[in-house]
Amino acid sequence: MALPGGADARPNCRVEAAGLRIDWSRQFLDEHSRGVLLSLAAEAGFHEARRKLFNGERVNESEQRAAMHMALRGAGERDWQVEGEVVSTQVRAELERIENFVAALRDDDRLGATGKPFRNVVNIGIGGSHLGPEVVTQALPAAEGAPRVHFLSNVDPAQYHRVMDELDPETTLLVVVSKTFTSRETMVNARRAREWLVAALGENAVADHFVAVSANVRRVNEFGIDETRLFRFWDWVGGRFSVWSAAGLAAAIHLGMPRFREMLAGAAAMDRHFLEAEDAVNAPLMLGLLDVQSIRAFGWSAWAVVPYSDRLRLLPAYLQQLVMESNGKGANQRGQMIEGQTGPVLLGGTGTDAQHAFFQMLHQGPLPVPVDFIASACPQGESTADWEGHRILLSNCLAQAEALATGKSPEQVEAELRQQGMDTDTIRRLVPQKSFKGNRPSTLVLMDRLSPVRLGALIALYEHRVFVQALLFGINPFDQMGVELGKTLAGRMESVLADADALAEDPIAEAAAQWIRSHWEPPS
Ligand SMILES: O=P(O)(O)OC[C@H]1O[C@H](O)[C@H](O)[C@@H](O)[C@@H]1O
Image: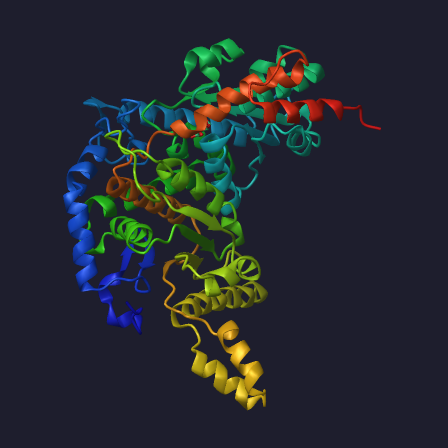
């Protein structure tokens, strides 16, 4: 099927939802295939599944939990329920606690152990307890006077040094974020940061300098943080859906509470669109269905997300967790193995940098990779140079999408080469190498400017799209069983590396461990 010639030819492939202009005109979709995709959604029970999701039923069956992240951002609008129990009251209460805390930091009412105001905040957490707050912090400028927010996620000590070595314990607040409060990396980093603090300011400083964000109250208490310094979220908030909860505390500190609430409102607006828009113009539904079509009907297993925005440079990594941890699964909810690819492999980078890296493959690689182009009409800054740079950025964004769709025919290439006076043999060899097949699909997501409300809507758009993909594949998108085995083995491997008498079960791992140990020497 050829891509349509012009966007106006397909008015139903473009919607404005929650302030985002979402255009899938350059996808392989005509009236017939749209009908097929929508009937597949109906067969998969889309309306009922969406109802269950928004009603707080146990959609995460393997873990027997709801997935009610919508309640976190819509708490002001109505009383959301989880398994029949109203949760909006506790959500609002926790938001208020966060608000008071952020205000106290801003107004220097909450001080460090030696009476100095906090100038730096370190978010210690990994996965959903890191990517969400960092993606927001990078995307949006800090509120005036807000402390600088840093992120410590990796257990690699090099990262610890990069983040912590420049900080002053007296003016640093440590926020340990972990839903389970068991993630090894987070616990190791939190303990090391605690030692760093205690070495400088003594044991009593812990109470002033540490707060926790978790669903596991007992573990937090065991770590030595009492409930007055614990911000809660709940079992029904998945890690990769948790930025809207207290797990977004670092982002709230960075943005200030009014703008954090605006982000929640943007996501809530996308929730309303997903819940209320007609199927054919329901952006998360249609995009999710198109993803499934790309994977299942066309066999394209990759997907690229390219924000033309330096501020959204972490978005592809954030979406990798959202998409691939949710839907990168080989068994469906009924316990049957799924044949073929499920969730797409997501690659990404920012435009225009990515154009000089992996775009070659997008244009001429043998298999199409559908691309999401994301851009804002206005730049962040207001100077003439900012507007000029931004115009160039946007031109590239629109041009790349067009080039992918239209391509360049062999005839056109041949004519150009002839005009340059090239000989026939060279032309024969060069024409296939220089032509572009075109017909490469893309989706364009535009917003007026990157603001809290638009960012919220953008992230929620992807969340619901992932839900739709999962529904069509029969997958539970809310668990992540596939991360467990490696964690268990890493635990065992720690003793193998620490103790030469402890052997690894696997001979290849054992040989590698021996080699590593034989190369251990103090730094010169
Ligand atoms: O928040 P935590 O419990 O520390 O979990 C942090 C992360 O680690 C887990 O292994 C999962 O892969 C992620 O979904 C989660 O966000």
